[in-house]
Amino acid sequence: MKKRLVAVALTALTPAIGMLAYNEITARSERSTEVHRQAAHTARQAASEVRSVIEGIKGLLIATASIPSIADQDPAACNTVLKSVASKLASVQNILVLDKSGRLVCDSMGWKPGTDFGDREYVQRALVTDDLVVGEYTVARVSRRAILPMAVALKRGTETIGILATGVRLEWLQDRIRERGLSPGGSLTISDRKGVILARNPEPEKFVGTRVPDQYQPLLSAEQPGTIELFSQDGTKRIMGYTPVTDANPLYVSTGLSESVAFGPIDRASLTGLVMMVIGAALALSAAFYVGNRFILNPINHIVSVLQRWRDGEGDARTQMRGQHGELGQVGASVDGLLDELEVRRRESVRSDEKRALMAKELSHRVKNTMAIIQVIARQTFKNRSEENAVFASRVGALAGAYDVLRSENWKAADIRDVLVRTLSPVGGERSDGITLSGPACLLGAEAVTALSLVVHELATNALKYGALSEATGRLEVLWRQNDGRIELDWREIDGPAVKPPENEGFGSKLIRNAFSPTMEPKSQTEYASDGLKFHLSFVVNPTDDLEEHS
Image (cartoon, rainbow, N blue to C red; front, side, top):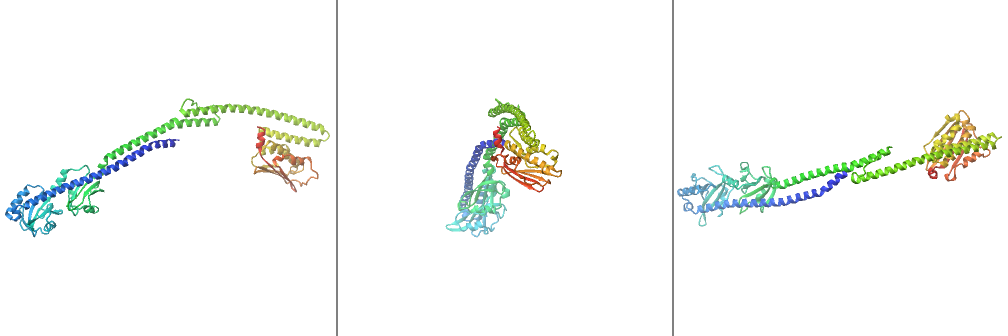
């Protein structure tokens, strides 16, 4: 019952659980789409800011290249001009003018002219293009500081006569992205075209100058911007938006949003919903147990207990539940009414049984009186024939014994062993120790009891007079079994005198042959063996008919 109540409670919670799961899935899907969109937007915005910085440097270099002393590569005037320009800029480390072989002509920091920069990749690229060249992560040759080099070609007409170059200080770039700020748990990374990190927030000291992990290198050259979910190098799981390196974006930019932060409100709402669901389930189960015990199980157990006590003989056991426990109280009241009715019927049955027993005793007494009168008539009739009188009296006595057996069983039926014991006891006399009875319990109807008593009496009388019971060493075995609704009985006299078939059929043989009604399908077989009589009897056993007759 408790399991059923729990199942009902859980079934009632199923819609709420389904709704919670649906809301969780829907909210996470919508939030995921929103976060991916936000990450992509943040990456585009950061890339746009980087492009603004680059465009500013490009404008600076183009404007500086138009100064006559720079265009003419006049070392004395060039140094003064470059120093003046650089002093107004916090973003650059130095501004250099190189000849077309890559050697230093002048600079804003007064380095020794002739220093060779021709091996630098950005210098080689600037000599063959008219656009701004953005280099890669570079350690300055003189100051040994990390910079992002940029260069443009100095032109005289269409001829390239030199290079104007500068280097954006990575510390300045790092300060810019730090000032830009991050969402909690977020990140921003800027790297060159080869994936070397130029600036990062957070933990720049740990990542600047290192390469983007190999599994993310393909993002640098992706066909278009996008988003991806990954574990960053600092171990945080993020939704990252990225802008790959293109002609318009010479640097790779990525921004990440912390998944735990982005989904924090949903996680908290889900946790709250789950806690409320658990509390609700606990309350529902507690209520189910309480209601089940208080209003269902306890009343049911009480009813069962009362029925058990009543069955064990406590006739006045009642539930006393009238007007209590709702519907189960009505059941208890009905049970009390039923037990009251059964008690009334039981008392009536007891009175009927007592009356029936009294009538049976009276009937038995009258039958015995009748038998006694018959014996008196027989003695008077066979006054001079004492032997015939004794035989007749013994047969009447056997018939009376059959009535005694039935009376002990309320005239309904009797066990075959009781019939044999009652019939053989007066006949066997002192030889009862030589008689063996063996067989299963089996009820015989009244008609069968009477017939079997007469047959066994005749067989026992002959055994005592002429058969095995007439000698001290003789024995008698009576065996029976029940098979397919028939009784199979074997009468075996052992170690007695030799017997032979009678010359004429006497009354006893006729009685044995005709004692059973044809409806009982009797079959008998007699064998006159050298050591004693062997008799087999078979008949249908069906005490039901006799019971119905006496009901």
